[in-house]
Image (cartoon, rainbow, N blue to C red; front, side):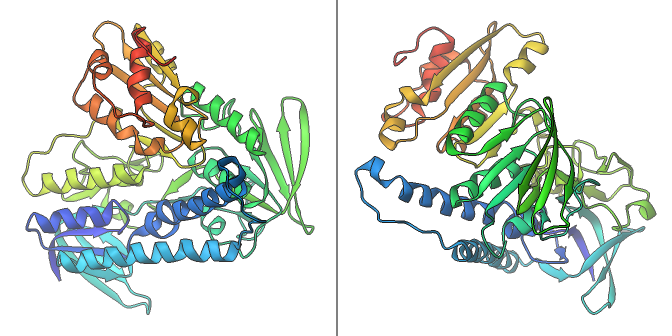
Amino acid sequence: MSYDVIVLGSGPGGYVTAIRASQLGLKTAVIEKEALGGICLNWGCIPTKALLKSANVFEYLNHAADYGLSVKDPKADFSAVVKRSRGVAEKMSGGVQFLMKKNKIDVIMGTGKIKAGKKVDVTDDKGKVTEYSATSIVIATGARSRQLPNLPQDGKKIIGYREAMSLPSLPKKMVVVGSGAIGVEFAYFYNAMGTEVTVVEYMPNIVPIEDVDVSKQLEKSFKKQGIKVMTDSAVESVDTSGKTCKVKVKTKKGEEIIECDVVLSAVGIETNIQNIGLEEVGIVTDKGKVLVNEFYETNMPGYYAIGDITPGPALAHVASAEGITCVEKIAGHHPEPINYGNIPGCTYCSPEIASVGMTEKAAKDAGYDIKVGKFPFSASGKASAAGTNDGFVKLIFDAKYGELLGGHMVGANVTEMIAEIVAVRKLETTGMELVKTIHPHPTMSEAVMEAAAAAYDDVIHM
């Protein structure tokens, strides 16, 4: 029962780590208490995208006349939409099972707890405890929906993202508390399906980590879709004693009571580091995060941590990249440390959001003399032909050297476009090189070239 590497958790950080470890010739095991693929594949990244696709198709049906088509009285079968989403998740989880077998990785089902001496106790569903040992232990236990004292989740009237993916019926009215990625994605989904949605955000702008121009565009698009947006507002309490919820919201103009069927708490996540043995082993944490070096080793040799439980961005692709870097170092390779300034972020509401690098404000605050180029999709032939011309591409360059400091997009399918900007930043390509990079016509991606040209006063189609 001894391994070279034991991975605690099988989310996109854990299972990718295990596969890479096996590829490098290390005898590997994964411990998982629920379902392979973790929250991302089963209750997060993948099933939410299935829901959003259903909402997107339903929107197209409702606007078929805009495309010269006739569709009579389209209806949404909410339970069928949820069922499809669950089916996609189950298929993907099954795919991870296949990958475990293909790579000869042992899957140990149960709840793991690390111990001194690089050992792990695993308790199965019958209460039986089995001890395993490894040369290296990688902790990848992820995170869960954050709970606030004034928003106690009961799973029925006040819910988290997990319940939001499998409600038994479509609510008539919903209040979404928080406008990060989870909040705005569900706001778009439920609004598109027919729910009356109100988004409450404490900060001055929705999606507050994004460039302010992106935030303003999304708010404008949401209001056009019929979503009510309340910024600079805070939910003080929720009365669930009656048939409906009465949400008390504090705004700049005073208190407002909003009545709804369901309140979705989307105020972020908290790490799963409780009761996994960190204190007993002596692993140092700070503010709910496990402290690690650039190759993800903790203060205790042989114990590593990756993903949402570490100080980096809580994103699936970050967890995967960290796991690969970590295990390559364990195997004696010399991987390049991750540049956290070049991590793309994507939000899959409609219009979509994708960004990487510095916002305009961050670049100015850092003292850069900048050039900013912005190209609206309203000037894009492809976007106009597709009927999806909300949004823009915004690029920020260092005026002195032409370095691309940041890229920010809001619009249809921009999550499929951001990788170009990530590669440009990785390769340290200059603004003028991007201007001279021929993009195919007609495509949405032309907006990247045009935005770069706009920064240098060379834009053609605007």
